[in-house]
Length: 319
Image (cartoon, rainbow, N blue to C red):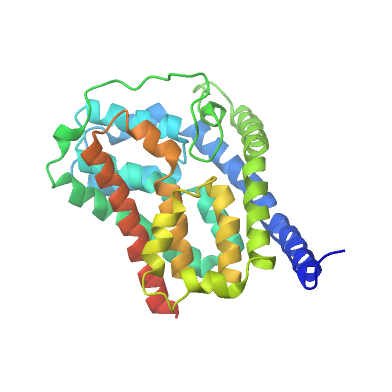
């Protein structure tokens, strides 16, 4: 027998688990297919070629745009960044690509639409895209180029960690050739999508489980004491807390949905998502091979600052 009140909480958590699973699993499978298509028609080496030779301003916009539509895992994103810098691309342009890649992509957009609706998603995409552009321009003017390590990134293992919780298999797309038909590209993208979905599903299920527990078991007053509007540092705290509790982007969004369902302001929730997606441990491990400590701290600080700004603006507009 459950203690008084616990049985109802467990049943509530179970119902919310089913609710999130019904919404997120089909969306995530569809997003995985879009990722596979992008990697078939726009492989990482093409991204690097398109960005070389661009200058500040329009170059930052192009870099953020390509970062947004090419949601490659860390094992592809960071080598592209290294290739850009070693080819002489401005640091600020490379940073716009790096900032946009984890924050604005097909997976984030489709899952955000399913959880929070189109309006919130549009505001989120516009704000994070602009933040990637402006952030890259600002960093480019700080004179930090000497803090880039002069090394080539190489894979040290057969399965480098991916930004969304997977392994190098998530980067296996984009191997098609110009002689392939559209049908062959689509079939390859579908195989890669299913492989990526199966590989990442445990992280999604873990995130849904944690979200269900937050919704049904964790006392609401505890959540509000830490992340509620009555706490003046709730948004900065959420942006900082995202990184150490990062599971994967697909795993964080169910947690974010549960927090919002429990009355936590949408801006605070999005600050949590941005902090986790941008300053994840896999990203920092790989970036440490390319950036010296000061530049790595600048990157992490920029992501947290973006999370705080985006969260604060959302809360001021929607509260």
